[in-house]
Amino acid sequence: MAAVKEYNLLNTLPEKDFDVITKLTASICKVPISLVTLLDSDTNFLKSHHGIPFNESPRDISFCGHAILDDSDIFIVEDARKDERFHDNPLVLEHQAIFYAGVPLRNEEGYPLGTLCIFDTKPRTLDETQKSALHALAYQVINLFEARKRNNELRKVRQALEAQNLELKNFAGIVSHDMKMPLANMIVTSDILKVKYGKQLDFQGRKYLDYLKQSSFTLSEYITGLLEHYESEKLVSANSERFDIHHLLEEIVDLLNINVDCEINLPENNVELHCSRAALEQILLNLIGNSLKYNDKEKIVIDIDCWKDKDFYYFKLSDNGIGIPKNKQKEIFDLFTIVGNLDRNGKKGNGIGLSTVKKLITGLGGDIKVSSKVNEGTVFEFTIAN
Image 1 (spheres, one colour):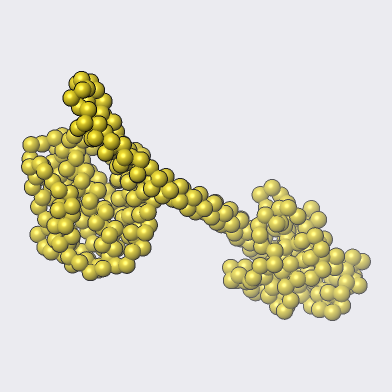
Image 2: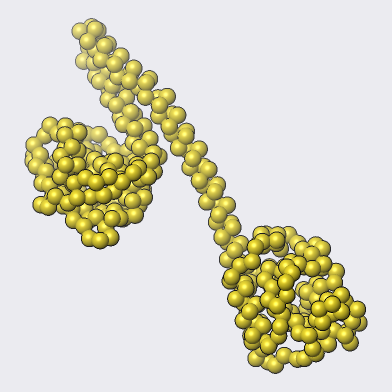
């Protein structure tokens, strides 16, 4: 009974997959009635019923209750009127269920869950081909049972993960907002201390204050990145807008406030886009920002291209930066994975930005790939659905 309940099929609605099998079974065996049954403690539930209008019967009068207890691969009653177990059975008297054949549906542990069975209103036999077909179709029913069980288990896992993800999002949001103000206070306080008491501190003391301020900035950036990662779904679900790529990129360049020698080449053609502008802006901010930070050349060069077809928008961003080692390129989109290189200012990354980029692109129906050579540069190519 525990095995039957694991499959969560009792008292469920009819399903076409099972109905097709009972219809095919009746056709092959040339009988008017074919059933897929599941046996509860006191009920014979008909998961699929071909040829009769009801979907359950009492277990104590069911043929299938005998079939699942029989050791043979197929339980056959050629003429129920002559069988002492069934001659006065209400099914025989009312529905003229005289012939019966049932194959027990056993799960991987060997427990019989029910049967694939057939009835006829006259005595008869089955030939070897029909018996073989009945076994084969019963095997397919078991496969459907197992598929439904796996789907139910996966659904439960997914629901648990969704609940955990929501909890983590809420936690990240609360922690981020609660920590932002103390960090801002630490940054301002370190500046005040340096201005007011800087002359009274030795070189090491001033260095400690700088370290405190820089650590606060690093933690603040980390928290911001974490919050952006868990709120990326909001950007993906934002309403689509019409805009052109040149205007978006010009705004991004202004936002980045670049103060180094840098050449950014925009796409030759000014492509008009229709998608979540906020999500694409976040993607490009991360990628262009990385090209600026992870670059040791005197002059930074970033080339951006964009084109489209009827299904996708295509983007390509290449730079002349420090590059990514080949053995790290597959994992750079994993959350908290860092290559290990220090950026242009000697700071280490937090492994959040590219994970957020990947999450946003996937949410927009696209994909991203990277190719890179150490000391020569990196190329990111990605798509989003049109």
